[in-house]
Image (cartoon, rainbow, N blue to C red; front, top):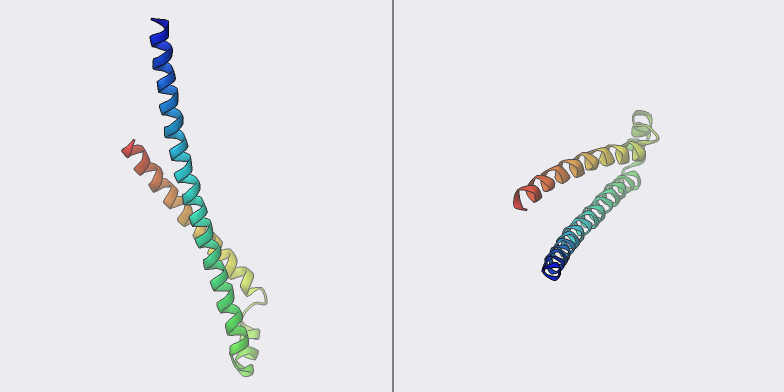
Length: 103
């Protein structure tokens, strides 16, 4: 009888370990994908700001220099980071809801 119980608990521990490993791998892959998308989006936005800075005519840039703050790229980056943090939070909440319903 003890061998039967040990086999049962051993099988349960093996199944639980495989299940947790699979869930962890999916979570790590999702975080890596989201991080790469966030970095790509941030780079594109900063590149667009830099392209505008060098492509606009001097009179336009003179007016923009008086109207826009000198730390505009930092402000845009902070805004994008806040939006992405909120999207990441919402996405995680929905993913956790779905995972809790499925399992």
